[in-house]
Structure formats: C-alpha cells, structure tokens
Length: 241
Image 1 (cartoon, rainbow, N blue to C red):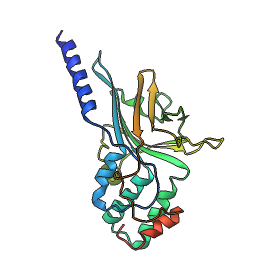
Image 2: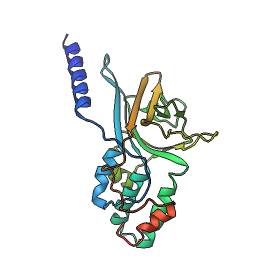
Image 3: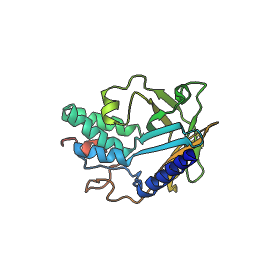
C-alpha cells in the first residue's frame, strides 16, 4: 500500500508542477536583435525544454531528455555572449554572427542531453539504442535527422553555455533538414508547435515548442528586418556584440 501511495504522490506532484509551469511561446522570425551578454540565460531558458519518461510501476527513469533548439534568436544571443566572454574584435564578432546565422538556412539544429537508467540504450548513435528521434509539428510533418553527433567529452562551452550538461548524460548535436526533398518546410509555416519525439519499445515522449506571436519575447532592433544573413551581421558590425 505504501508503494502505491508513493506512486500516487509522485504523480500528483508531477501534474502540479506541469500545471504551474507554463513554458514560454517562441517566435521563429528572423531579423536583428538587441541582446546583451546578460540576456543569454533568459534566452537559453526560452528555447530549452525538458521531459521525463518514468515507469511508475517500477519507479524507473526510462528517459530524461533536455534540449535547446538553436534557432536564429538563440544563436544571436549565443554569439553576443561568446563574443563578450572571449573578447572578440568587431570583425571577429561580425564573421561569427554571419556564419552561425547562415546555418539556420538549411538545417534545424538541437543540442540534446539524455539520461536513462540503462545507459547504453540512451546512446542515439548506437544500433542498440532504445530510442529514435524525429522532428515533428502539429501539421503532421515528421522528419528523420540528417546527422546525430555524440559529444564524447563536453568542454567549457557545453558545460557553461548549456548548464544542464552533466557527466551523467549523453550529449548530442542533432541536425534536421529545413525542407523535404519535394520542397516542403519540415516545420510548417502554419504550425502552432514543433518538437522532438523520442520513441521506442519502452514508450515515447515529446518536447514541444509552442509558436506565439512575435513581440516582447525577443528583443528586436527598431529597424526593418535584414534581407540577408550578411546584412544582419553588418547591422551590428560596430557594436558590442
């Protein structure tokens, strides 16, 4: 009986936490931002999601996954912080910003950490992994990754810039195409949310980013959006990125 009560209490706590914590909506719009290095933590939180899949009958943590979507908005804040931390020159900042924003043109990239009690099953690069991952949205699109890179030894950038990185988790960089072979967007322009689905014999779990109206959630520059990545970088070429 005590075990059942404990499980019930655990479920009640999980439901309560889920109801109390409303995840922020995000905007996929592009354009210049007015971030400072102190904004990074808030931007990281906005673009990061965490979910756990627990076998209540066994009190077994089958899967805990935390992921940051490296969107245009996130990448701008990341470069601002990186440039400040490493004291880059104006030209170095501009080059880095242009290069990192350009990566959003042909791929959706996610930084992912996984934990499970069966450690070998949570390595997504191994044939015996318990999970497959897909990019999904509410319009029915489902896309397989084009690359899954295991970060064997996370360094200072991973640990400091993604503080949920720990020695207990596998760390991956996962890349998906932005368009299908027939030219359709893998995240529909009409989508209300997009996410990552982890599925396998032990169950399935989804991380979701709800898409909201562009507004106070991002610090937009008070200028017209740039027409290209190079223009976006040039807009801040003389500022403290």
